[in-house]
Each structure stands twice: as C-alpha cells, then as structure tokens.
Length: 384
Ligand SMILES: Nc1ncnc2c1ncn2[C@@H]1O[C@H](COP(=O)(O)OP(=O)(O)O)[C@@H](O)[C@H]1O
Ligand SMILES: [Mg+2]
Image (cartoon, rainbow, N blue to C red; front, side, top):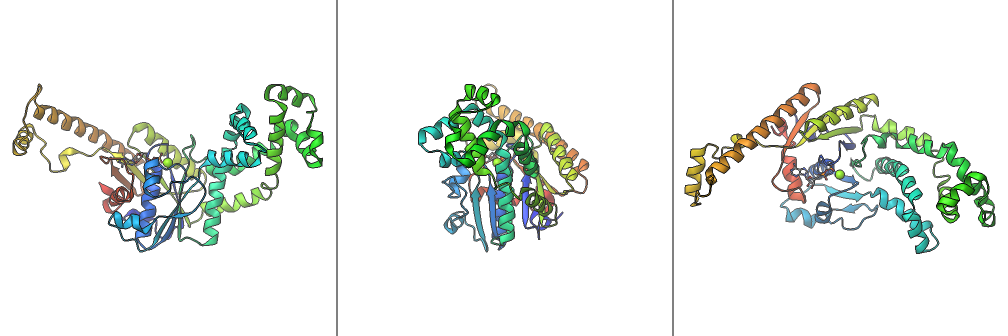
C-alpha cells in the first residue's frame, strides 16, 4: 500500500475529521510535518491543540495568527525540513468572547455579557459561525496561494461534520423569525439612534428584558447589528467553499481509535461524508494496542525469568515479578487481539479506503519528534 503522503499527493486542503480525543490534532500536525519535510510550505489550522504540543511548537499565544514553526525546533528534533511548517490556532469560543470584549463599552459590561446565560447559549449556538470561519480561513488561504497545503484540524463538535453545514445553520439562526421578532425592533432602533433603545418596547421584549435585563438585550441587538452585512453574500460564498471541499483539491482523512463505539462513529462520518459527495481519502486508526508477542521481546515466563536474571533484577514478590510481567503481557496480547479484530472489521467495511494503523505510543505526542514518530506509521504497509 502507498504511504499516506502518496495518497494525499496533489491535495491542497486536507481535513482531519473524527470523534473527540481520537488524535485529529496530532494527525493533522503529523501530516503537516511530513509535508514540510517533503519541501512544502504548509499551514496547519488547528482548533484545540493539547497545551504541551502547542507550547513545544512555540504556539504559546492564543489568537488567529499564522506562526512559522521555528527552524530551531526542527534541528532540536534532529529534523531538516526542505519546506516550511506554519501553524495557526483558531480558538472558537475565545474569538467569540473577544468580539464581545471589543464591542463592549466597559470591561464590566463585557464581563456581564460573558457571564450572561443567554449569551452563553447564543454564543454556543453561534459557534458554528466560527467553525464556518475556519472554513472561510481555509478558503482564503487556499485562494491566496500563500501555502502549498492547508491542513485543517476540525473542532471537537458532537457532530464533527458540522463545519460543513455551519453556513446553512447560521443563516438559519439569523433568519430565525423568533429572533427577528425579539431583536428586530432594537436592531432597527439601533440604526436610528441610541435614544430609542432606552426603553424596550413590545410585549416580548418587555417580558424578556425582565429576565435578562434590558441592557443585555440592547447589547445583544447591537452585537447582532454589528454582524449585519458580514452575512451578506454568505450563501454564495458558502457554495464556493463547499465546491472547493468536494473538489479534487481537498481530501478528508478520517481518524478513529480501535474502540468499537468510536469505529461506529467513524463509519457514521464516512457515510455522512459520502452524503455530501465527499470521498474518504484515508482512515487512520490511532492508538492501537501493540502486540508484545510481535516485538521480539521476552514473552514467555521462562524468557522473562531469564531476562530478569540477565538484568540482575530480583524476581521477588508474591506473585513473583516474572509472573506479574507475564500476566501483563498476556493481557496486552489479548487487548492487541481485540484491537486487531476491530481494525480488520473497519478495513473490510471500508473496502478500498487506504487504512493506516498507528500504535499507542508510550508517551503522549507533544513535540516534533513525537509527530515524526507518528509519521513513521503512516508509511507503507499502513504501519501494521
Ligand atoms: N498514537 C498515540 N500514542 C500516544 N498518545 C497519543 C497518540 N495519538 C494521540 N495521542 C495523545 O492523545 C491526546 C489526544 O490527541 P489529540 O490529537 O489532541 O486528539 P483530538 O484532536 O482528536 O481531540 C494528546 O495528548 C495526544 O498527545
Ligand atoms: Mg483536537
């Protein structure tokens, strides 16, 4: 089988999708590293990098800045990339809260809004807008041709394909009649001057303001007003983004764990992609239990006893250390068998989709060296 990098050759946008916690961010960064090693100028657009990974890549600040991974980081990991690796962190909630802070007249007011239940609900409902912004960013970077490849690490939403439909959902929220009825008068008033905003008018608004405080509603109306216009041409652009994602320029990499439930979810994603006329370019089963019997180490009781003796480690305790080690190896082998069966089930079900299995490493993946180790399993033979 071809290595993953070959499978993805020529693709300019690579989206890593899958359930939460399976290793999307890690995979996205590992693919980016590989592309950079191969001479590409690559941007990985990540949503929620584990703190240690972000730190080790030098992405300390939150914010929507494209940051080049310092070549010094590569040499420290013993790597010499022929290209450039860039990363950008897109913090959905953070970006949204930032907008509130910018809009607010005082810090107290901003805090009041941020703490408000309605705002929290709304900003979550509107989080799709930021997922959409991620897609917008991909689109913008792609069309600017600043990078050869953009890799998108998708957000950990319950439905990870949400971002494909975010645009439609936002239009729904904004077109929502209830919302317009409630906020409409305020938004209109806002256009003619703030005086009119002093007293909430209309029954709905009066009732609502009793619960939420009229200040908040006024701020909210102002907030939404500020967003007006941003959504103009939204539909047209959304269509172009969708066209790009379904084109040959884009590839979707499905990441999963060998856990049966997660595999079910992966199959669901695969189908959801197909419903959007998107082919799954590759599947990565991450954190597969290694089979201790396949690594040439001591795996029988007598071999373990011999190894302990050689290492001058006392075979003591009850049960004996060698017996406990032997039990651990047996357990690990059983787990490895379970995982292998799951991987095979997935391989059969997704017949024809290149599948790579990446073992569970001893440590979490928190730097370039760790990412490079992951890449080693994305080569030929799918790491099996
Ligand atoms: N193959 C692996 N072996 C060991 N740890 C891993 C492996 N893949 C990912 N991890 C660790 O698992 C955690 C979750 O991975 P992450 O890529 O952030 O998942 P996701 O983005 O899907 O939520 C991270 O701490 C990462 O370092
Ligand atoms: Mg992630």
